[in-house]
Image 1 (tube, one colour):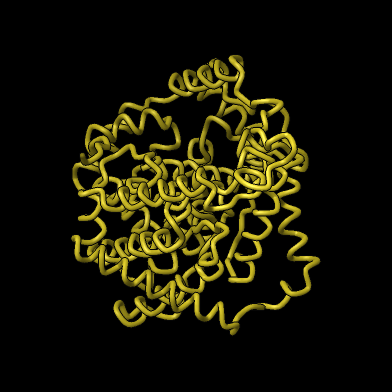
Image 2: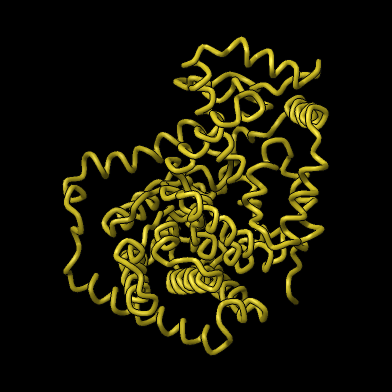
Length: 453
């Protein structure tokens, strides 16, 4: 999996340190704290923010760069700030190891160990009353980006979601406590099935959570984010990408998604520019602020095509559930690479239709411009400079000099070996250890990812 639990611990610590900084300024302790930080670094250069602060950013959090609040504040004060902060902080960590194995391929730990880390995060959330943070974004987006059609995206994503439910229940967690911490993430392409992907997902999830697991009303609610399809962005006539993104955004808003990300039109060829990002944002603003029909919730609900599509998509998803069950469930399917094979076959089918012109894509394989719609070459590719790379390496070296990381990393390994909550240990380790330090230490006790062949 991507190192989501470690990044989450970094984020949580940053949020706590921001609140510590506010406390320091309120109490007028700046000079005293600065002296303590200087003592910690013993003449070594402290980390600092590289470049200019973005406009309107007040720099909150930069005072304690390179240290954490517990190193400079009394223990009781720090603990009080920490407890308050983590119960209020909001956000989402993707963490979804199942879609990583099935589609995205950014796995680093063994699947078993990665699942355990996910469970430890959710257990920590329950024990520490972290109610406003989603412990996992169960993702279909990457399944769709890898080539799956909308039915497969939805079926694999929901089946992965139910796998997490079963796993968390097997660890003794209360469904009403972890259910609200689960969220979903889907892609919206241009196919008609995407018009109902959210309502079908909510329908299936709510019925299963209520009737199979006995969950309460809050845990039955499926919260989902939509990102418009990156796969539908083409390098030919890139201006047309905004048109496709607008239609996909309409699908999402009419289907009542909880949040929406509209892609920039030039993402097919490069990192988005400020101008292209503004246009992507304008798509949402125009729909939400100007389009009259969008001011009404469920504007297309009740129409024949939407109701018919809902029934057809639900039926197709349930049939795929049967196929997954017959083959040994989600984890059993992953061992025989069923999900990967299915995604690859659907991707190949789509690409074949695109290349032979049976699936028309305007400006790409049909209605070409007078120039033949050549691929647009980006004016500038944004890359880190050598100076920036060396700055980062030096910052890491100074961090190591200022802190004894060996003892903390050994304690982390001990927690893993003795079946204690690893995320609890990560919250301490991430204060002074780098991502590379932590990953290397956990490889030794959790195992590195190896694909089944």
